[in-house]
Structures are given as structure tokens and as C-alpha cells.
Length: 105
Image (cartoon, rainbow, N blue to C red; front, top):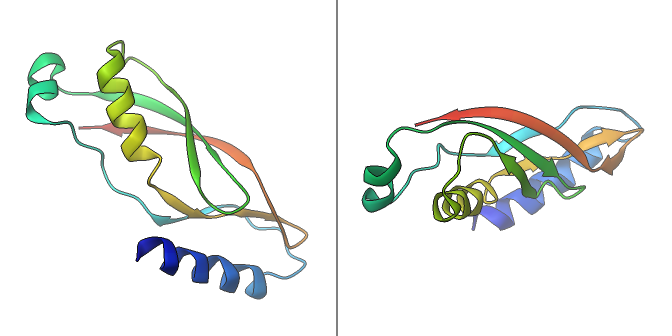
């Protein structure tokens, strides 16, 4: 359901900003969490997340800093890749962009 809402929002975003340049904006995100057994293993997480937002507003995680545990990294990457954005537009055309954010939990 979120994906369908997102697809419609992207269409409206493209129509509203025809021939304009605008930065990406968050459509749907949440603070990632770890299953209890992983949280017990590593405790609190404070990480810089570098992501790529494609021209459709979908996310790929490029890197997580300060997370050494592969299983934790995979878990967090999987959750963060569920975030959705309205894509960056250049002259009304959606483009891929990279950005970083800090995540603490």
C-alpha cells in the first residue's frame, strides 16, 4: 500500500514541478530497530548512513559508519532501503542523488 501511495505521490510531484529543479524530500521513513538479540549484542547504534535515492525515489544504502557487525549492517540496510522519497528534479526531470543522514537508536 505504501508503494502505491508513493508511486502516485511521485506522479503528482512530477506534474507539480514540471520544468523546475527541486531537491529530494522524504515521503516515508522510520527509525530502524534491531531484533532484541542483536541489540543485546551491540547496544545503541549511532551511525552515519549514506544512501542513493534513485529517480523513482527508492533507496539503496551505500554505507553505514561505525557498524562492524555484518548481520547488524544487513538488518539496518534492509530497513533503511524501505524508506521512500520524492526524487530530486533537475528541470523537471527526476535524477539519482546521494545523501547522508545520522541515525541513532
